[in-house]
Image (cartoon, rainbow, N blue to C red; front, side, top):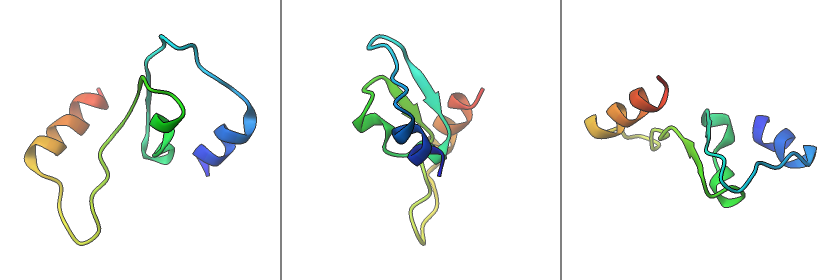
Length: 60
């Protein structure tokens, strides 16, 4: 829902602005190249230790 609202809002970020968003914005990298989202857990699988570490660092 968050990402759908963002797409319809017309809000756009500057090209050089780095955007860090939560999992509700999966797919934003297709619209804004300098965006980062945490890694989602694949269905039926667990995140690797490195993926968990990345998510923790990103959320600080």
